[in-house]
Image 1 (tube, rainbow, N blue to C red):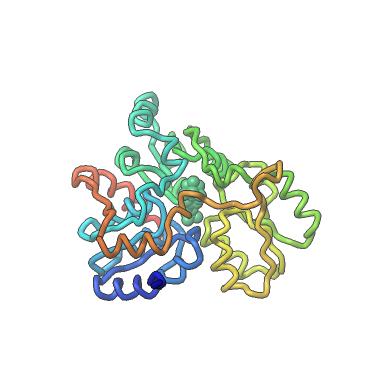
Image 2 (image 1 turned 90 degrees about the horizontal axis):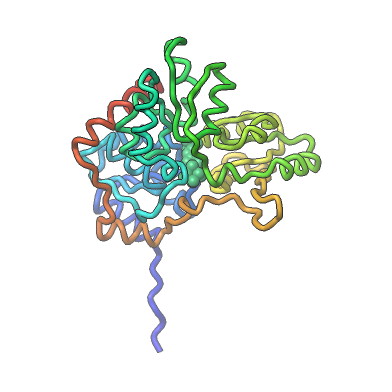
Length: 314
Ligand code: 13P
Ligand code: SF4
């Protein structure tokens, strides 16, 4: 009997990275072993900037499809690979190009500000894009009398209204992961850890954001936890962030907040983000497929609102 050859995917990926001159970008929600082989791990804004500045021939995006599409729009001369084209996002699904066009048509006097978690077709119809790290700044940069519609995340939209004091016309989309955090579970955990700080992503429901000590993007949460004098944190975002946090703040206690009221699920993982594996990254680099392909016309339209965002995010 001969034992099947076991491939060390991390080693093989690093070899391919060198021979194919590739840049590997990973979002904080990726599996720990993927974060370990990436050139950069970051939030959506940071990864967009790395993609735009990439000099390598190939960008391998360990994240979800809208992120890889953003990399292609910002650096169209590069080959952009996504290990699994099924890495979607519930926010993208909530907003179809046809429905968004109709929404805009109903409100022609409104400027369209859209969250980066949307398809290329929605970006192409938008005036300016934002991420969770720069959304407040972008809304505040607009003239006070300018009417604004915001899509597709209603929770981030509500948060922006509270933070900026501005009225926004909201699209009714949500993140399946962040909307599932349980208010009662957070309160019960906080009773157990009364000295802890609650950190949350703005994609969560208002009831969660109202009790959080800090609300911000994945990168902003890590920064807050690093700088805070507190020793215990209740983390209301996708569990992948715990990998970098454990490295950055090994002496702090990090407690993931459960998602379901009925204890049917205590984890907070995004199935779309977790669809990527080391094996899929290896295979996609080997075959240079699946590749992100977007028409030049669509890229030309979608890059404009993205560039407006980047010029306000220096
Ligand atoms: P960040 O902008 O914080 O990376 O968030 C992206 C995302 O998909 C959160 O669910
Ligand atoms: Fe989309 Fe939510 Fe997953 Fe982020 S965590 S990719 S917003 S479904």
